[in-house]
Length: 450
Image 1: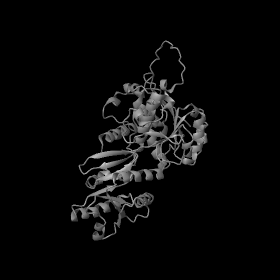
Image 2: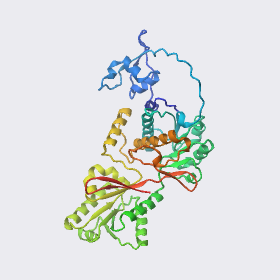
Image 3: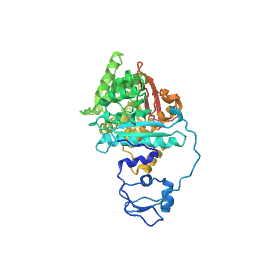
Image 4: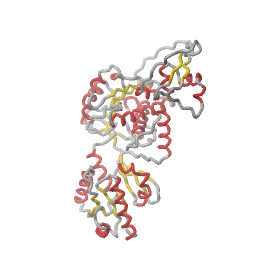
């Protein structure tokens, strides 16, 4: 199945079933449509071959600022205006992507069966919002979308003749599909954009592949290097949080090995320690940097409680903390503690949930799709928007020679900065990683490392 989207935001209708109306009225109106659950003005207009403005002109009540389409409403469907005869223009045939609509294929799990489907549908909607924004600046797109679930077969998608016409394919989500899609894109000279962290060995051989996220091992090594640069004169304090479900042990183990190799002393303590034993882990002479071995909110709250006792007992003790990307989810309720304890969060993206820009995007998403974004990290709709804005602007400027260097595209991301570098003569991988620092002066800084 594929869908070709010229009115970008109308693609929401691919997830809905739009019934035909049951009766017409004389010859004033072509039809009168009874609104069903989840139908939108965009979808109704599209299904009758009308523009939104034409539908609103026939139904003036829709022009009121507070109007909301409701199930059971009746909508007048006008006859389409007579076509305007225009002089035939000479046909210019060109395959330069810079002079025509950019053809984008999306091969992701676009369904409502499970979490992957919900997240990728939201990501896809962000792509559509970007395409809608870009058309106002003269960048046009044609989009095809294929549902590629985990238990499916990407061969069905790439067998569609439309797939070979794409300039860019976004996907897949699952590692098992990378090989087939990589071969297909290489054969047809299609840029292949892998938007999330999956195993993709073809990155090292296929020059058409772009991958956004590094592997977890690569990220751990990068953050250890960042830690050593930023906190080389600090006294590290590791706090054991007794979280048997934690996945952060691989990072803290790598960090401790690195500190051991450099003969840097550090202390170990735990949330279960008495206040006296906990406080002995902190240096009175050096600034301390605290590292937890979990990213869970409950243990973070306990750690703040223990640190407040240290700060009250020994005001001279200086404390910073290095956290995890997950901590961005807890920003609203922990913001004052983030400022107080000089928290550094390493991440390849920054979701500032309290920024005006994020609030504006949230309102636009709600207006277009009549629901809020999921409370996840990253915000998947924003990720899709940033990815599409970056790539489509780049391809519009450089065509298929676009290499993804950050300075080559005039776009300030809302959440996900991109800067690609060639990997061993193969494809390109995003190298952006930074600390988000919540300073004691109550400011938020981004400290980038590359």
